[in-house]
Image 1 (cartoon, rainbow, N blue to C red):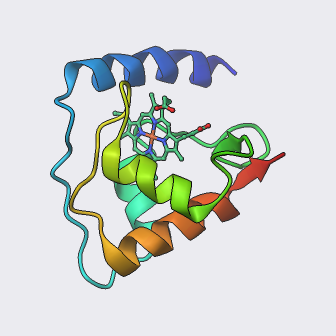
Image 2 (cartoon, helix red, strand yellow; image 1 turned 135 degrees about the horizontal axis):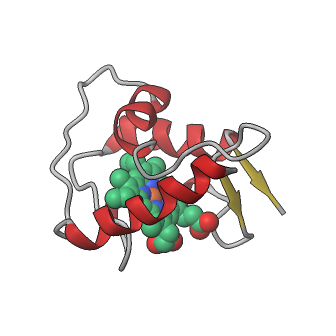
Length: 101
Ligand code: HEC
């Protein structure tokens, strides 16, 4: 619990301080898990129970997740270099590691 409270404000700070786009480029054979553990855990730590996200209906599909990664948001950088099969694999991994409604 303590860890979550320390990590969260730090990630928010990073997100705000960062430009809108992250130029991380995965290797061609990278799996979703590789990518997530290299570049996403910095902001998305596992929650109690081991899942990373609690996704609402609108976000609980690979298309919505992929679009979040490609476009980012006000708080999250975009990852334009995560593409094609790697993006698909990453989205499936995120979905499989999430709680959905
Ligand atoms: C610099 C910090 C940061 C990094 C790095 C980051 N994210 Fe995020 N992400 C956020 C923040 C903050 C939010 C919450 C705001 C929002 O939904 O846009 C978020 C939201 C999300 C959501 C939506 C969650 C929901 O409940 O709707 C998904 C899915 C997601 N991120 C996936 C990823 C993936 C996959 C990666 C790695 C490619 C990643 N994020 C990297 C900060 C980050």
